[in-house]
Image (cartoon, rainbow, N blue to C red; front, side, top):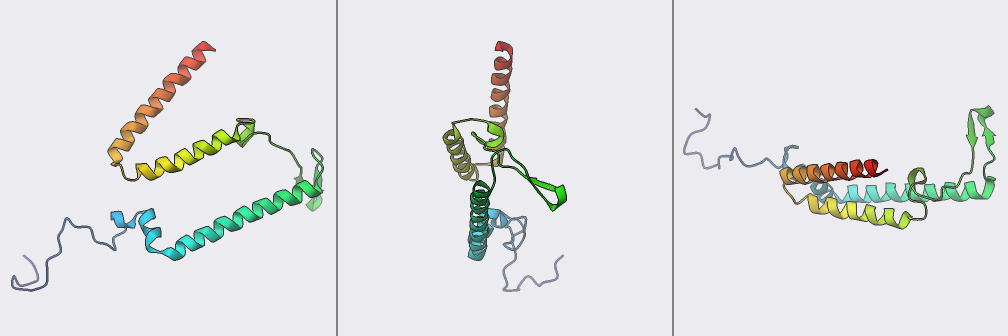
Amino acid sequence: MTDRADDDPRPQPDAAAPVQDDPRTPAAEPAAAIAQHPRRVGLLATVAGTVIVLDLLTKIIAVALLTPYESVRILGGLVYFSLIRNPGAAFSMATGMTWLLALVAIGVVAGAKLVERVPLALVRRVTGVILAALGVVSAVAAIRG
């Protein structure tokens, strides 16, 4: 039984239709939320730009003021600054091949944009197959030495 009369002209809400303000609806996904709020995009761009500029400035200052492999003691020895060059990417991996890591990063971003349009069940299956294949490749590589 409902609180309204059957002749009420107002439309009945469809129970299956998502409510737009409900945070559990697809409209509340991060990409849609950012698209609906352009100020968030501006804030994100400002924060990202600031972080990149500060990172670059600290690197320029470190190269200008520090001697490689000599520690500078500050705060009574609580903190030491050392200039150590990394020829590769993270943890010296892919020395001389940072261009490849950039391509991988671009591929991951492009893949993420494609995946957001694919049903979640398919993404899970494909991810499982890829992880299993990587496990097999890793096991074969370990056996071969």
